[in-house]
Image (cartoon, rainbow, N blue to C red):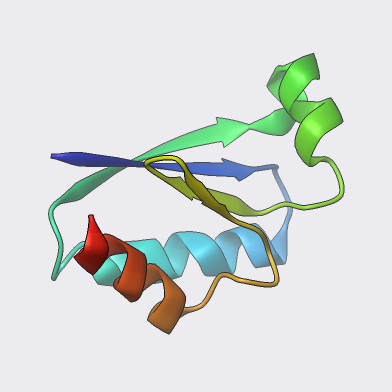
Length: 79
């Protein structure tokens, strides 16, 4: 089973949107979502504080401007 990592933070409407997209796609693809709050890890905060949400599928990361249903579906089909 594929693991998808969602880098996010609390009270973030874009993060909530990304979660909903992933939830919708779970109906069609076999993957688990590991959500990581960037404010609980200083390294993640430094790396992603201006880019969240970020979705990581295998070694590829999609930032907030790249996350949409079509891009996510394409990456999940490829892998």
